[in-house]
Image (cartoon, rainbow, N blue to C red; front, side, top):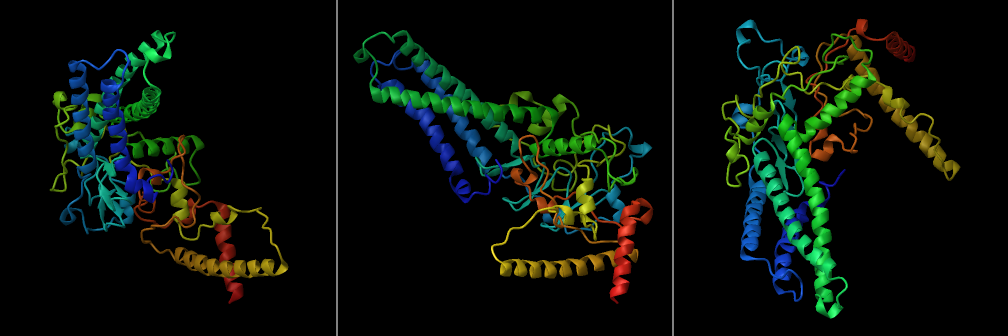
Amino acid sequence: MAGFNDAPIVKRLAVPAVCLLIVFLAYSSQYLFHTAENLDPGPPPTKQTITFNVLLTCLWWTYYKACTVSPGQYDPAVAGPGPRPTPNDARGQDSSSDDESTAAPTSPVPGGPGTRWCTKCNAVKPPRAHHCRHCRRCIPKMDHHCPWTANCVSLTSFPHFLRFLIWTNLSLWYLSYLLFLRFAALWDSRKWPSYLGPSIAGLIHLTLLGLVCFVTSLALAIMLTSTVKGWLFNTTMIEGWEIDKHERLVERGGGWWDEDDEAGGFPDKVEFPYDIGIFKNMSDAMGTRNFLLWFFPFAGGPRISRTGKGPGWEYEENGFNPRLGMWPPPDPDRYRRSVPGWAGDSMDNEGAIPIYSSPEERKAAFQRRQEEDMRRWRKQRADLLAELEEVEDYEVVTSDGGAKPEFKNADGETLGDYGVDSDDDENIPLIRRIDDDDVPLGEILRRRRVVELDDTER
């Protein structure tokens, strides 16, 4: 699915293609069943026709809602611009006080400790929100940007997306039942003369319906299974990706960061905090505790609070972590690459032997490398000197600084494949200075060599 959402043809034709697929499976099949000669068991009874078309009506309505319901937008008057986090806030919010022990723990209030900042919206980014590069705004509880609905699956649109998947699967299963009856009749009459059976065109049409229905049913069943799993455990697709990444990092082990440095590394596992019980997960996602409305195609969904608190801004946590607001955990590798003067990228392509067609090309490449080295050296020297001068605060780092390719989960997906603007999802509120006591000896020696070489040049 990598890069699928970004293809211009997908953005233009995905929704029309889904509509054509529904029309082909839903209505060309009924036309075939009612008009094909010698296609046993004949035209469907009135009860089957009504049932199938009721399912199709629910399918069309839920698809329309999944495509058109706004994924949500934070009120600019509430979300920002506001005070940016301080370096001390990067460590997250302190543990709840004794006075708050009786209340359900919720994620940090935007603007308080542990607040994330969206550099694209120039506003605070509430918990579980991500900046969608397709919708071009921060989406509350963003699950993913679905190309087939041209819309984000989020806090407000998730109920409609789930209902669409449910009614689509029910319609496909009922169509599969109708097709099975006709394929079974063909098998029973396989020894009859061909002129007693349906025409060649009818057989081709029936075969195409069977193949397309099977492939679509399989794909939609997988999608429904993964969506229901996230619904039960209160995890979005993006958070599932974050969980996989965090578990991979924990298995690999922490780096050279201090164990108490929550902003720089996490040697201990951070539990996913938003799984608060199956029924509570399901009712919060659907916006009501009335389970009869969960699957009703004409029901609504949650709405974002306009006060800066409540739905879309705060989320109840299970209290398994030492404090609130620890999710998502920071990536120590990305944090390390964000520190000014980090030179780990210089070894990424070490050992690669370039091939040149002529001595002139080799000389030109050498000159380009010289110029790039000089520019890189001047930049690194300035950053290192600023760090050695004990500058306390650094600005927000929005680029990866030549970082390695993003983490890919078992399905080969990166964060950008879900529609997230990766450049704005660093999960590094601010870069603070790292004392020499926290830095390995080899790193300190490297810095000293840089300073000595700089003095020699002067």
